[in-house]
Image (tube, rainbow, N blue to C red; front, side, top):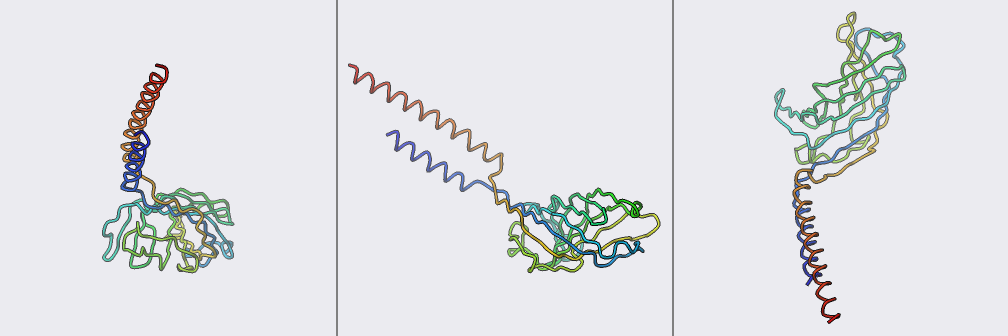
Length: 225
């Protein structure tokens, strides 16, 4: 009887786990870039520069139309993005993701950065990521599969924007030289629903343990009598 009850309990637990709502994937990529072009009159020392960094896409981020026609914005979907340049320019933060057709780019960034001499006045205030051919297959960000370097556009994929009182609209564009998926964390049950399941399962285990103890006590009494 105990084995039968245990099998039923485990079967029910598996069914509940499969039915739990899950978070979508967190896709993390490492990238490298090479300086392509600048706007706003940068010192020539930027030419030939390279950079590297990483970004993480939270495909569970909610989407809504806008801010322009044909656009869909996913609030907070770029949960982290960073850039480290060979010239010492650093930037990191997070932002929303916007799709126009099959092109993914970041918008409304929350970025902090720093620049060493001779770029001290050029403090990064924006990182824009442009990836073409990176649209989710089902039209929702939660349907976004991992993509590869060969599948997305390379030119001007990373754009750094700067706050510079002397050079209005200063920015630097970098083209991808590599893109590697380093982490793909698949859906995990939401903590709230997981807790709702664990508590009853613990109660069930406690009850089964009690049944087992009672069975052993009855058996001992019969054998001892």
